[in-house]
Length: 234
Image 1 (cartoon, rainbow, N blue to C red):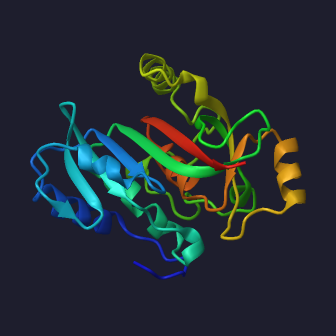
Image 2 (image 1 turned 90 degrees about the horizontal axis):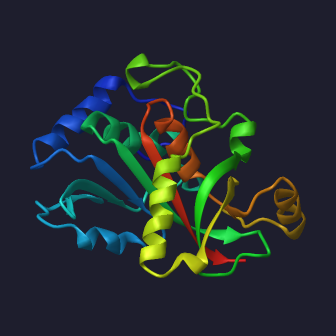
Protein backbone atom coordinates (compact mmCIF):
# COMPACT_ATOMS: atom_id res chain seq x y z
CA UNK A 1 0.00 0.00 0.00
CA UNK A 2 2.87 2.40 -0.65
CA UNK A 3 2.09 3.54 -4.18
CA UNK A 4 1.93 7.27 -4.79
CA UNK A 5 -0.50 6.81 -7.70
CA UNK A 6 -4.15 7.83 -7.52
CA UNK A 7 -5.36 4.23 -7.28
CA UNK A 8 -8.36 3.55 -5.06
CA UNK A 9 -9.40 0.55 -3.02
CA UNK A 10 -12.61 -1.40 -3.43
CA UNK A 11 -15.20 -2.10 -0.77
CA UNK A 12 -14.18 -5.75 -0.94
CA UNK A 13 -10.58 -4.87 -0.04
CA UNK A 14 -11.68 -2.85 3.00
CA UNK A 15 -13.98 -5.71 3.98
CA UNK A 16 -11.18 -8.28 3.63
CA UNK A 17 -8.98 -6.29 6.02
CA UNK A 18 -11.88 -5.84 8.43
CA UNK A 19 -12.74 -9.54 8.46
CA UNK A 20 -9.08 -10.43 9.07
CA UNK A 21 -9.01 -8.15 12.11
CA UNK A 22 -12.36 -9.35 13.45
CA UNK A 23 -11.09 -12.91 13.50
CA UNK A 24 -8.27 -11.84 15.82
CA UNK A 25 -10.00 -9.56 18.33
CA UNK A 26 -12.13 -10.26 21.38
CA UNK A 27 -14.39 -7.20 21.25
CA UNK A 28 -15.37 -4.87 18.42
CA UNK A 29 -13.99 -1.40 19.21
CA UNK A 30 -16.38 1.51 19.64
CA UNK A 31 -13.62 4.13 19.91
CA UNK A 32 -10.66 4.59 17.57
CA UNK A 33 -7.70 6.75 18.61
CA UNK A 34 -5.10 7.77 16.04
CA UNK A 35 -1.94 8.64 17.99
CA UNK A 36 0.18 11.45 16.61
CA UNK A 37 3.81 12.40 17.16
CA UNK A 38 5.08 11.28 20.57
CA UNK A 39 1.66 10.07 21.72
CA UNK A 40 1.89 6.40 20.73
CA UNK A 41 2.43 5.45 24.37
CA UNK A 42 -1.30 5.91 24.93
CA UNK A 43 -1.77 2.41 23.57
CA UNK A 44 0.18 1.06 26.57
CA UNK A 45 -2.76 2.07 28.79
CA UNK A 46 -5.11 -0.38 27.09
CA UNK A 47 -6.05 -3.46 29.10
CA UNK A 48 -6.76 -7.01 27.97
CA UNK A 49 -4.74 -6.56 24.81
CA UNK A 50 -4.82 -9.71 22.64
CA UNK A 51 -1.64 -8.52 20.92
CA UNK A 52 -0.39 -6.10 18.33
CA UNK A 53 -1.56 -6.24 14.71
CA UNK A 54 1.09 -4.12 13.04
CA UNK A 55 0.57 -0.63 14.40
CA UNK A 56 -2.99 -1.34 15.57
CA UNK A 57 -3.50 -2.09 19.26
CA UNK A 58 -6.86 -3.43 20.41
CA UNK A 59 -7.98 -3.50 24.02
CA UNK A 60 -10.07 -1.77 26.66
CA UNK A 61 -9.66 1.69 28.16
CA UNK A 62 -11.72 2.15 31.32
CA UNK A 63 -14.05 -0.61 30.18
CA UNK A 64 -14.56 0.75 26.67
CA UNK A 65 -13.43 -1.36 23.70
CA UNK A 66 -10.87 0.72 21.78
CA UNK A 67 -8.38 0.50 18.97
CA UNK A 68 -5.24 2.68 18.95
CA UNK A 69 -3.35 3.34 15.76
CA UNK A 70 0.30 4.08 16.53
CA UNK A 71 1.52 6.31 13.74
CA UNK A 72 -0.08 6.84 10.36
CA UNK A 73 0.60 6.94 6.62
CA UNK A 74 1.86 10.39 5.60
CA UNK A 75 0.82 11.93 2.30
CA UNK A 76 4.14 13.79 2.01
CA UNK A 77 5.99 10.46 2.14
CA UNK A 78 4.44 9.51 -1.19
CA UNK A 79 1.39 7.56 -0.08
CA UNK A 80 -1.78 8.29 -2.03
CA UNK A 81 -4.90 9.60 -0.32
CA UNK A 82 -6.69 6.26 -0.51
CA UNK A 83 -3.85 4.66 1.47
CA UNK A 84 -3.64 7.53 3.97
CA UNK A 85 -7.32 7.15 4.81
CA UNK A 86 -7.49 3.35 4.45
CA UNK A 87 -7.51 2.69 8.24
CA UNK A 88 -10.38 5.13 8.75
CA UNK A 89 -12.67 3.22 6.40
CA UNK A 90 -11.68 -0.02 8.08
CA UNK A 91 -12.61 1.54 11.43
CA UNK A 92 -16.04 2.30 9.96
CA UNK A 93 -16.56 -1.34 9.00
CA UNK A 94 -15.35 -2.46 12.43
CA UNK A 95 -18.23 -0.52 13.98
CA UNK A 96 -16.28 2.39 15.47
CA UNK A 97 -18.61 5.17 16.66
CA UNK A 98 -16.09 7.74 17.92
CA UNK A 99 -12.82 8.83 16.29
CA UNK A 100 -10.23 10.74 18.33
CA UNK A 101 -7.21 12.08 16.44
CA UNK A 102 -4.10 13.52 18.11
CA UNK A 103 -1.08 15.28 16.65
CA UNK A 104 1.67 17.81 17.26
CA UNK A 105 1.23 21.12 15.47
CA UNK A 106 2.67 24.61 15.20
CA UNK A 107 0.90 27.51 16.90
CA UNK A 108 0.06 30.67 14.95
CA UNK A 109 -2.03 32.51 17.53
CA UNK A 110 0.32 34.77 19.55
CA UNK A 111 -1.83 34.19 22.63
CA UNK A 112 -0.98 30.48 22.62
CA UNK A 113 2.15 28.92 24.12
CA UNK A 114 4.34 25.91 23.38
CA UNK A 115 2.90 22.98 25.30
CA UNK A 116 -0.70 24.17 25.07
CA UNK A 117 -3.32 21.67 23.98
CA UNK A 118 -5.73 22.88 21.32
CA UNK A 119 -9.11 21.39 20.58
CA UNK A 120 -10.03 21.90 16.95
CA UNK A 121 -13.34 23.66 16.47
CA UNK A 122 -12.97 24.09 12.71
CA UNK A 123 -10.34 23.75 10.02
CA UNK A 124 -9.01 25.33 6.84
CA UNK A 125 -8.04 22.66 4.34
CA UNK A 126 -5.55 24.32 1.99
CA UNK A 127 -4.85 21.18 -0.11
CA UNK A 128 -8.59 20.54 -0.23
CA UNK A 129 -9.15 23.94 -1.81
CA UNK A 130 -6.82 22.76 -4.57
CA UNK A 131 -8.79 19.55 -5.11
CA UNK A 132 -6.79 17.15 -2.92
CA UNK A 133 -9.71 15.44 -1.21
CA UNK A 134 -10.18 11.82 -0.07
CA UNK A 135 -13.76 11.83 -1.39
CA UNK A 136 -12.72 12.64 -4.94
CA UNK A 137 -13.76 10.01 -7.47
CA UNK A 138 -16.55 7.43 -7.44
CA UNK A 139 -18.66 7.50 -4.28
CA UNK A 140 -19.56 4.21 -2.62
CA UNK A 141 -22.85 4.80 -0.81
CA UNK A 142 -21.95 2.07 1.68
CA UNK A 143 -19.42 4.53 3.14
CA UNK A 144 -21.72 7.54 3.16
CA UNK A 145 -23.09 10.46 1.21
CA UNK A 146 -21.59 12.03 -1.91
CA UNK A 147 -21.58 15.64 -0.64
CA UNK A 148 -21.02 15.74 3.14
CA UNK A 149 -21.47 19.02 5.01
CA UNK A 150 -18.24 20.10 6.72
CA UNK A 151 -19.67 23.05 8.66
CA UNK A 152 -20.01 20.95 11.83
CA UNK A 153 -17.31 18.34 11.31
CA UNK A 154 -16.18 18.34 14.95
CA UNK A 155 -18.42 17.04 17.71
CA UNK A 156 -19.45 19.75 20.18
CA UNK A 157 -20.34 17.24 22.91
CA UNK A 158 -16.87 15.66 22.77
CA UNK A 159 -15.34 19.13 22.95
CA UNK A 160 -17.35 19.96 26.06
CA UNK A 161 -16.38 16.65 27.62
CA UNK A 162 -12.69 17.33 26.91
CA UNK A 163 -12.96 20.73 28.62
CA UNK A 164 -14.70 19.18 31.64
CA UNK A 165 -11.96 16.57 31.97
CA UNK A 166 -9.28 19.26 31.65
CA UNK A 167 -10.97 21.18 34.48
CA UNK A 168 -11.11 18.07 36.66
CA UNK A 169 -7.43 17.31 35.99
CA UNK A 170 -6.36 20.88 36.72
CA UNK A 171 -4.98 21.58 33.26
CA UNK A 172 -7.67 23.83 31.82
CA UNK A 173 -5.27 26.80 31.90
CA UNK A 174 -3.39 25.48 28.88
CA UNK A 175 -6.37 24.02 27.01
CA UNK A 176 -7.23 26.14 23.99
CA UNK A 177 -9.74 25.89 21.17
CA UNK A 178 -9.14 27.19 17.70
CA UNK A 179 -9.06 26.83 13.94
CA UNK A 180 -6.58 24.36 12.49
CA UNK A 181 -5.03 24.93 9.08
CA UNK A 182 -3.31 22.11 7.25
CA UNK A 183 -0.73 22.53 4.52
CA UNK A 184 0.88 19.90 2.32
CA UNK A 185 4.42 19.76 3.68
CA UNK A 186 6.90 18.39 4.41
CA UNK A 187 8.56 21.84 4.46
CA UNK A 188 7.48 24.19 7.22
CA UNK A 189 5.68 27.37 6.21
CA UNK A 190 7.56 30.58 5.45
CA UNK A 191 7.12 33.74 7.53
CA UNK A 192 4.92 35.23 4.81
CA UNK A 193 2.82 32.07 4.63
CA UNK A 194 2.37 32.10 8.42
CA UNK A 195 1.07 35.66 8.21
CA UNK A 196 -1.39 34.65 5.49
CA UNK A 197 -2.67 31.71 7.52
CA UNK A 198 -3.05 33.88 10.60
CA UNK A 199 -4.97 36.47 8.57
CA UNK A 200 -7.35 33.70 7.45
CA UNK A 201 -8.20 33.01 11.08
CA UNK A 202 -6.00 29.97 11.70
CA UNK A 203 -4.73 29.42 15.26
CA UNK A 204 -2.45 26.47 14.48
CA UNK A 205 -1.10 24.64 11.46
CA UNK A 206 0.61 21.41 10.50
CA UNK A 207 2.79 20.51 7.52
CA UNK A 208 1.01 17.27 6.77
CA UNK A 209 -2.71 16.95 6.50
CA UNK A 210 -3.66 13.39 7.34
CA UNK A 211 -5.87 14.52 10.24
CA UNK A 212 -8.16 16.59 8.01
CA UNK A 213 -8.21 13.82 5.40
CA UNK A 214 -9.22 11.38 8.14
CA UNK A 215 -11.93 13.68 9.45
CA UNK A 216 -13.23 14.38 5.94
CA UNK A 217 -13.41 10.66 5.25
CA UNK A 218 -15.34 10.05 8.45
CA UNK A 219 -17.66 13.02 7.83
CA UNK A 220 -19.57 10.91 5.33
CA UNK A 221 -20.95 9.02 8.32
CA UNK A 222 -22.79 10.50 11.30
CA UNK A 223 -20.05 9.78 13.85
CA UNK A 224 -18.42 11.63 16.74
CA UNK A 225 -15.05 13.17 15.89
CA UNK A 226 -12.45 15.07 17.92
CA UNK A 227 -8.94 16.31 17.09
CA UNK A 228 -6.51 17.32 19.84
CA UNK A 229 -3.36 19.30 18.93
CA UNK A 230 -0.25 19.55 21.08
CA UNK A 231 1.38 22.86 20.16
CA UNK A 232 5.03 21.92 19.71
CA UNK A 233 6.20 25.23 18.29
CA UNK A 234 5.00 28.82 17.97
